[in-house]
Image 1 (tube, helix red, strand yellow):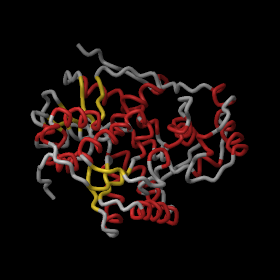
Image 2 (image 1 turned 135 degrees about the vertical axis):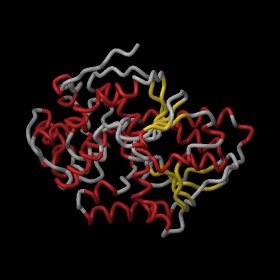
Image 3 (image 1 turned 120 degrees about the vertical axis):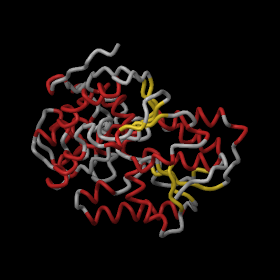
Image 4 (image 1 turned 90 degrees about the vertical axis):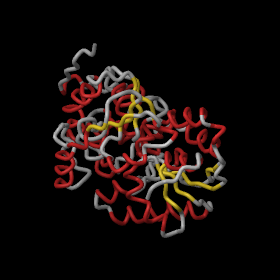
Length: 350
């Protein structure tokens, strides 16, 4: 029986070790940032300011791409610290009307009839992406139920808006909404959802009463079961790694595992894996248009130079942001689960 989880803002205590930062030999969290050109000495000075809870120009220039979470090999959560400090200092990474709109969009409610699509395990959560309901079919998803909508929305997107208090206000009810259905395990379509119930909750010491399964982990396991039915696709693909993958880098190997299984080549390029670039959607939302254009241009040119035939996405928001740009360069955009379905000989509905 699930015991109701009641959390207040004071219950969220970031597991941040100040001494780990003070003794860091590299300050890679900032030195490796692709949107700020900082040497080690400047990075150290600015990081130490933030460790002490002080203001820093980093808080204003951060594009909220989550990458510093991955660059910190000590697991000390620099981006979660940055997000907390942005709110503490009333720094808005996005225009206020856009933040308000998103805060209202994500209110957990049952009023939207799209929010529920079955409740028998196995179950997959589509978060706020009902447009993908019809693609969750075929051999990969036989017998699956779907949950979708604000009632199950993970809320982690508010890290992009410098408003982590919204996550804290709503997360316990989201966990309760999921747990009250008795789910022991849930596959998360969007890795931002997966990362909420793994990376974020662990960083703040929050217990989660169900097992979170990354979509790619599930896809790989199911493809192994269907291996005799796979027809290798023999195409070259570029993988557009989303921001939220930075919070679960231990799942990155499933990308290569899946590609090997379905017979596609992940092209070698400059902006991939830990060096991947943002799709640009969040940067455009910040109204930093010159940077947005530059980031998308470099990303797409990199794919073209590597002779990619497909651009494979995990994140629907990345797909929406970047798909038109890759199509213009004769690269086909496709979601990972749809690419897998092609390898099983299934027709993907447009």
